[in-house]
Length: 137
Picture 1 (cartoon, rainbow, N blue to C red):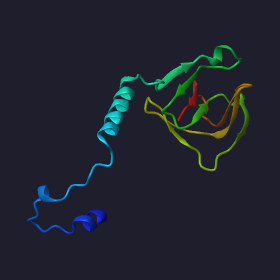
Picture 2 (picture 1 turned 60 degrees about the vertical axis):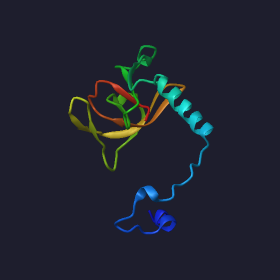
Picture 3 (picture 1 turned 120 degrees about the vertical axis):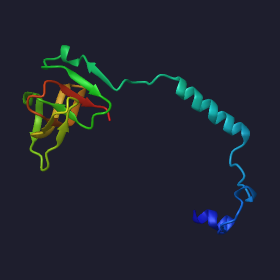
Picture 4 (picture 1 turned 90 degrees about the vertical axis):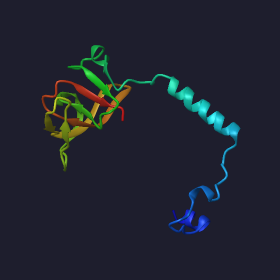
């Protein structure tokens, strides 16, 4: 706003905005048309990932229960304490809100190695959680 006031001055109550000097566009017509083409092509493409899908990693390893990949989740979660390669208590436990409206508090945080090439860090331990959650956020 200060920049506008410096450019145009303080308008009085009877100033006609249509008579004010207009700023010149910063892009050429060609650049603007290219922008519109790019924008349209991105909107026409389907999303690369869905927000929720079930991972099939549990079938090839000795891991209990399904693992869900969730693009909207904030944290990795597991309810199976035996999967943790390390776990520590939390200074401030996390309150987790599930889709069904229930709320639970995490009881620890640690690391899980699902296989040699896939290790999850900062996994919240939520006892009795019937699935594992992998956050992609």
